[in-house]
Length: 377
Image (cartoon, rainbow, N blue to C red; front, side):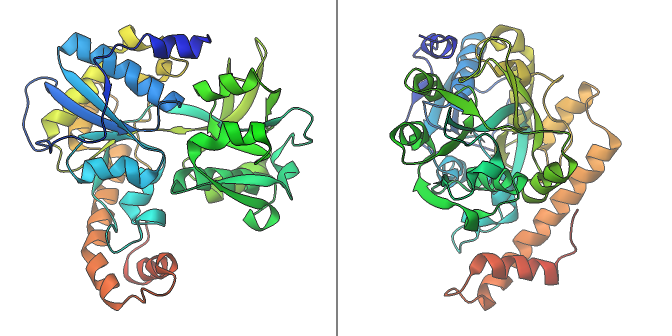
């Protein structure tokens, strides 16, 4: 049993998986951490789930509360419980960005731009892995290879596209294989894909390395042209090092994509619930920081505290202000994003009224925003 699976096995049954739950009172004001919460996130074989479960277990015990976890392999599946008031928060991939801007899987008549806000923003390393001896040592080597297209997961699709861009490639240069996010390790072992993209500490990757020899694709953070190509496709990403992951020897370091995998909510969540959640993450950090390989990145010293593409919740802003972690620049950017979100949501009905629903709705929405909204950098 690996250190990852030992950490996961230690999580108590007070953190439960649900297929659904009753609607929650998101606008309820609280004086302490809520007695009941439901959070959604990735599936149980992922390191993202292990992080969430370990933190939820700690907070449940310390706050004498109940936190239930709903899981999904898809971006829409992780945000739907928030929209349906079956969860207060979701720990997501970049679908929180796409939902805010009404892009990718959210450019549909049923969704459109959503009033989502960031509550807590821990980071995690992700990377692309291949078989040792496959000849796929860097992103450029993916040309002509079988590359995963994570179904209904635009965040992962975007990151794989960024890996391709690093190597000077596009989707037209590879064989696209439709596959769910969690199926990738088994598919790599079976030869159905030639590389995979996952958070580097996923339990399924430790199981995979017991069956085949694996390696991480090489990235050079000093390669300015390649780094700029990544930023063009995935602006939320930084290239940085990670250690002690599956497929690595002791002391080995590789570079991957480092980006926030945040807890988000809808703006209608009360300020006090967002504030008490941020407070609990920080206050109980010493008790959960060593639970998994990435929970060390969950305190104020490591989380992102400046909004880039999605605004922070007012309750979190209050908490950050109290701890000297909120700047004038962050406040200005936050207000710009809030105003831009309001404009997007206000113009969405007008866009739908004139849209050609039989055509490319995604491109039409991008063109509409370019024509009717002031751009935001």
